[in-house]
Structure formats: structure tokens, C-alpha cells
Image (cartoon, rainbow, N blue to C red; front, top):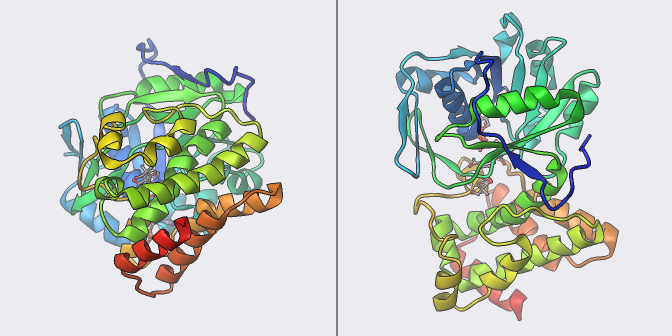
Length: 362
Ligand SMILES: NC(=O)C1=CN([C@@H]2O[C@H](COP(=O)(O)OP(=O)(O)OC[C@H]3O[C@@H](n4cnc5c(N)ncnc54)[C@H](OP(=O)(O)O)[C@@H]3O)[C@@H](O)[C@H]2O)C=CC1
Ligand SMILES: CC(C)(CO)C(=O)C(=O)O
């Protein structure tokens, strides 16, 4: 349930130190890019962490577990957290105060079995997936538990074994719901650090739509097969991205959702800025280009590892909502189809993609 905070100020910053300085038991299910980054940031914030990891990741972390960020902060985790395989998750004791789901949207349903073994009656489950309202599948499976969402605005890459680098800015945002408002405020204060600037929001659905607008570029990035920064310097990719966003903004307007600002520009302006000629774009959107040159989106990582992507939960969601609301979704439809071809192992070179985009934009 979302509280009725006025839409023009959906996010409130909580940075002052709490006098009750105790740590909570955190279990992180999904030791991938986000799970490992959060785990280390939580340990840095004096929290007790258990990671539920597949064997190959557990081995990697045993050799090295460290994080860094685009601002030059570095952290090596000397004393490793408890690392448990999904099969052994039932031996967790004490039960988690907070269970963080940092698995992909596609893995939520199949993880329910493991989640059942990780929760006690009072565990708060936090869903960290991109997309909109993917937590509902977990809330349905755990009707008696408090299920909330968190939004990860930044990008994490795994540039060497056991090392996780946050390549872009943005505050981690946790959902405030009435029944656990105090816990969420407490949690946000504990986690807030240079590695993980943290806020709360009273309207996570609006925030997720705002984030989805940016995530529509994941598919463009995956298809372009270049870092995000390189992609943004190409006006053709920017024009495609603008079209994808315009299709989403139609839905948001129809639904009367007021998008909170999560980039340096109001969301509605972004498509107009993206289509500017290069020299103007570089001036107006220089903040957008202040991004680590190595950064690639999570969808690129998925295709690289020959995994299925979250395309149905991102651009696919725009297609289905557009259809239902009588809108256009030509551009999102195109990228969905192309990403699915890549998932099937059909190689499409970026020259061909650029030629097709040129044709589509005519
Ligand atoms: N990467 C990024 O920079 C960002 C990602 N996000 C979002 O965060 C979410 C997580 O993404 P990301 O960290 O990139 O994903 P990853 O694929 O890097 O990590 C997920 C991990 O969870 C593991 N996993 C899946 N199911 C289980 C299970 N049942 N038990 C134990 N482990 C399991 C996966 O293993 P396996 O692959 O072997 O199944 C994988 O190692 C996504 O929704 C993504 O969109 C949001 C912002 C930025
Ligand atoms: C941070 C961002 C928007 C793009 O890198 C992302 O969410 C992702 O890669 O999935």
C-alpha cells in the first residue's frame, strides 16, 4: 500500500543519525551484481549480512570481496559474511529481519521455495527488481508478510573476480508503507553512507515508472553492444531512446501518474533533450554523460552471459500497457523483438541495427 504523500514530493531524505544504533539481520537472496554490492555496503554500515549464493559465486567471494564507486571510494571486506547455498537456506538462524531479493524478475517465481526457507514470521521482504510492481508475485505468495520494494538507480559492474563497482550516481530508495514506517525510516538511516546514499519514498509505483523510463534504454544498450556513454554520444540511438520514452510517457499520462525526478532533468523533458544535435546535447545533458565509460546495462550483461533478459518486464510492459490504453508502441515492440532474437542466439550486428533504426525513424 502506498501512502498518500503529495505527489510533488514523493521522496523524503533521512540522513540524521538515529540514537538506537543497532544492526539488523539481513539476508540477501541473489549474489549477483546488485546483491553483492548491497551486501558489502550493508556490512560497511555495521549490519549483519548473510548472502544466499550459488556455488560459483560463493567461491569467487571467498577469494576476494570488494566494492568501489565512481567517486573513488574503495572497500575490501576482510571478514566475509555468512555465505549459504540456496539448498541450505533453511539452516538460517536467527531468521532475517530483512530479506532482500536481488534476483532478476524472471527468477522471482522459482525462488519462492527458497524464500520460504529464509523467512521468519516477522521478516520484511524487500524486492529490488527493475520494472513496475513485480513485487506482487511475492506478496501473493507471502500474504502474511510485509513485502516492500527498493529502487536501485545506479549501475553495478563486475570488473574483476569478487569486485563490484558502482559506475553511476543515484540514491538507493526504500518504500515506506504505513505498517512499517518506523522500521523503514530506521533502516534508511542505518544504510545511508557514501557507498549507498539512501532515501525513502511514499510513492514507489510512481518512482518505478520513472525508473522504467530510464531502463527502456537497457535494450538499446544491449543491442548497440557498446558502453552506455558511447551509446549516448550516438544521436541515432538517442532518437530511438526518445521514441521509447514517449511511448511510456503516454501511458503515464493516461494513468495520471506524476513522475518524480530521478535524473538531472525532469523525466518529461528527457526525450526532447535526447534528440538534440550532438553539440547541444553535450552541453544541455553533460550530467547524463558524466558516467563511467565502462558502464553497460544489466540487459547487456544478461545477453553477454547468454541468459534470458528482463525485456518482457521493461519494454514489454510498455507494449502491453500501450495496447490496453490505445497507445502506440512501434518502437518498444521493435526492441522487444530484437532482444528476443538475441536471446535465441541470433547475432545481429550493430550496423544492421543502426540501418533498421534509421528506417524505423523515417
Ligand atoms: N546490474 C545493475 O546494474 C542493476 C540491476 N538492477 C536490477 O536488479 C535486479 C538484480 O539484477 P542483477 O544484480 O544485475 O542480476 P544478476 O543476474 O547479476 O544477479 C542475480 C543473481 O541471483 C542468482 N539467483 C537467481 N535465482 C536464485 C535462487 N533461487 N537462489 C540463489 N541465487 C539465485 C543468479 O544466479 P543465476 O544467474 O545462476 O540464476 C544471479 O547470480 C534486476 O531486476 C535488475 O534489473 C537495477 C539497477 C541496476
Ligand atoms: C542503472 C540502470 C538504469 C542502467 O545501467 C539499470 O537499472 C540497469 O542496468 O538495469
